[in-house]
Length: 289
Length: 348
Image (cartoon, rainbow over all chains, first blue to last red; front, side):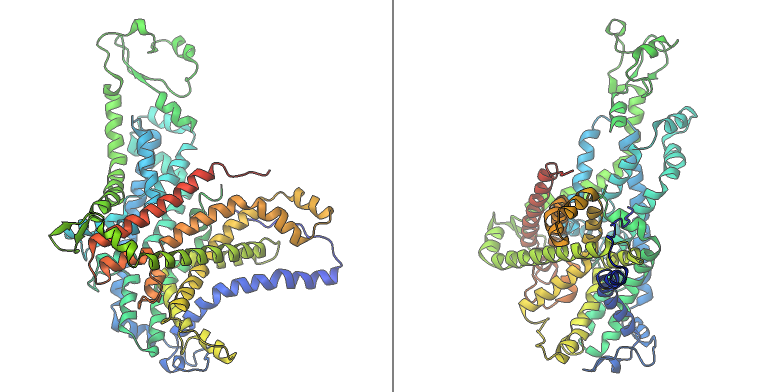
């Protein structure tokens, strides 16, 4: 999605115009940005403060001696490296399988003959409208019955069926020129190599979009990992942070909590900073054509 | 769309010992062209059909495609059925049971779970859900539109600002919740300090139902307004410029132009955002869970589904009943979307 400002500016006396631009244009722009940026900046600043700078009724804006002691304390209370690793594993494996499944499904839906396609596509599509929140108890019963509590596969498996990626890839594949695939078929390429040697290389931007949105969702996913883990060694970061919050009733621990928030927020923020074009496009898909 | 239709129309044939020929897309609609080619036979001539011709779906090619399709799409479809569809149906079944989660025994109690909800806490929970939805949807849309108006100018830095306001939408609800818990803290929180300095009362954000709900709504709106802003921005940029200029020449001021032209033209965008934000806030969980663990007046339907099953009560049947009610509400909203999205008004 490319959004460019195209509003024409009406002619005004130039002196007033400059002042008007600053007042009516830049001031709101700065305010809007600050509303979003300040809480995040506050998070980072506070995570570097000492407890004494937080337990005060007077505002301490900047830490006098920025230190990472809050991060170290947080790592003592919950096993941060382990939580981080768990999140990376769940996000990495989950996203990779999801994208693979979505590619395969979309390819089959578009390029392979099958009599019941017209029924199967809605079955997949409607899954977009069944949020995981609704399937909490039945999925927990099933996964717990299979012994999936406190396991990686127990966290990953229920979210694997993917409608979002399938849908986007299908749209993309339908727009591909058929001749390319027919040529590959003539050359004797099977479905696998047609998908991975022909279709995938020319679909990279869409794959990037789906991959990034999936990674963001998996990383932030909270409800299901919360329900299916109770051992702190198997929790993902967001779930582990709940533990941190539960163990702290004390206001002096806010720097520790902010350190936790930084660890869960910053990786996605960095990803977003560099690849926001794809992420915004993926998340606003359907609204903007 | 067309290409898929053609592919479905494509048929494989076998007759008179000729090799199997698939009518390709290129040749569709010009059967003569195919017939003219040597060595290729066209199927639909009934007189030529031989008695030993297999039914279409049994031809080897069809069978191979059938298997390929199952191999490629099967796993995903199976996962969706098992973890998406089955739960919806099983919820209905569970909802008729008096069943403690983790217990082997369950008793059929008919609709008692639903009766209990609607005669007991139901009113309060649904009211909370309604308030939460109305405030979050209203807040996100109004502020989102304001943001879009701010961003819809040819100024240096709009691209950066657009990214910045969108960012909270992709951040972890747990992380964001923690940050705002600190900001709202009644004693050491920056908001409380500012309010005290201004000699304003500091609400008991975490203890009283009203302020607690307001707090969660504020944070939800903060997290979502960038999404609404970006989509409104795209809507704003599709407003035809000549209409705006014509109105300006006719003497309509900026305010008049906004309410008489821009806002009506944005109605499809607004409708889309209302639906998406309703669905979003009905499913909202992270912020509520992390910000108000004491559960003071912020128990929405979604949160209650979690609370009843996993918040210490282990009430599997009752939670399933609540999930079923939530699903029906989501279904109705989605249905409204599908029903009206086709009929949405185009002005240009």
